[in-house]
Image (cartoon, rainbow, N blue to C red):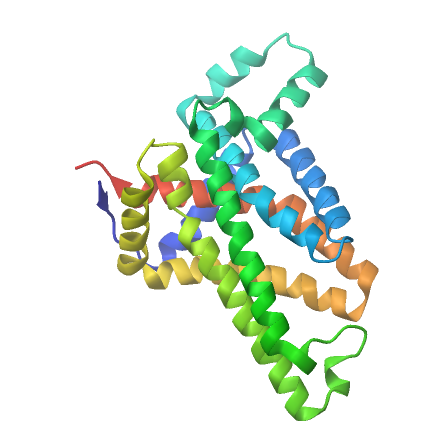
Amino acid sequence: MHVRRFNIPNSLKWFSCGQRLIRKNTPAWVITASIVFAAAWLLLQIPILGQLILVFLLPIIAASSLGEMHLAMSVSDESLRASRRNQNIITLLQRDIGYRLAGIFKQGDRFIFALAFGALALCAALGINILEQLFGGAARLESVSVFDAGFAGAVRYIAIQLITISAYAAVVGLMLFTLPLVTLQHMSIHNALSLNLAAWIKNFVPLITYFGIMVGVITIGRVVMGIDYFAGLLAMFFITVLGGPLAIASAYCCFRLMYREE
């Protein structure tokens, strides 16, 4: 497989492609994202362990959702509507949501690789948390505002947060194309990693722009939460419900357009 070269405007087109995919079954995606948000909020109430469990589950959910995107892309809207005609709406929603949350377990032996990616994300998150604990020190603020930590404390706190976010972004970047190449194209992990690296080398600027848009939206939600918890929680809910499916769908479009057969 060869890697295509893109420019910055192409990274915006990935979002419009994702929107078209979401519209094939908007209710199922909205409900699935709502369930993920509720589960994430509950898990994050458990110190450290809850975050690690969430990090382990997210690649599995992502792999399942990518499988649904792959199926939706291969079926025309007319065929999809015909296959769902005269079926019970509740039963269809239950099936659709189940596939989006755990459909990877029905994809032959591919679920083993999804579990492996979950374990990788878990190890990375554990390592990042340990490093943050070791080097963050006084920069880790709980109930104290960053503005009350003094100039040096504030700078150190911001630096630690930037390093932490960059580390998580590197993990996501590692799996951006590797995960669908392994689970959808049945490629070996070694070859998938090589193609993932090739895509980043050839398209670093448009991919960073693509990531930057999503990170910027999430950052806005976190800033609002820092000002008012409940307003921030509501903002993060809408970001998850509206932006979560779009992020998965646009990532799938990016993956489909990034590679071409030799």
